Image 1 (cartoon, helix red, strand yellow):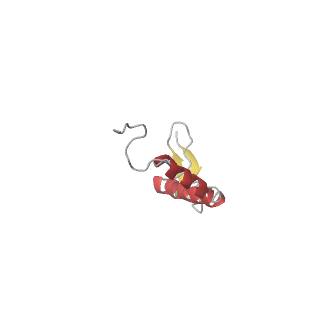
Image 2 (image 1 turned 60 degrees about the horizontal axis):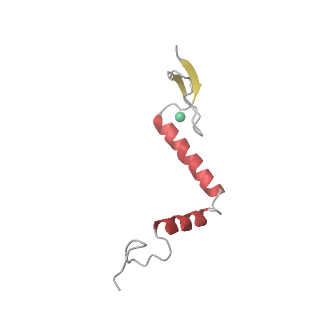
Image 3 (image 1 turned 90 degrees about the horizontal axis):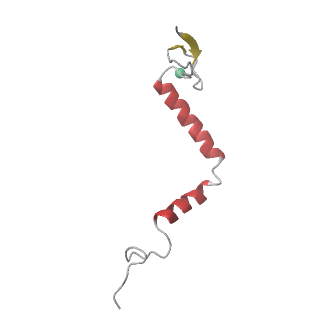
Length: 80
Ligand SMILES: [Zn+2]
């Protein structure tokens, strides 16, 4: 049995028949879900923009730790 649901995407008033077994479908279609996901993602980003630079710095640090001068893996033996 189909249930009628309203699309949860912002600004979308589409009505759809929820054919999912769990009746947890929130959007009429995938484009609607994507659009809303992007909107929420942007909102979250702008809300926590103050912490972003630190995270980016940390990422760079993790990919290239300080002290690694490009001489190969840490702990590699060098001939004296
Ligand atoms: Zn929609």
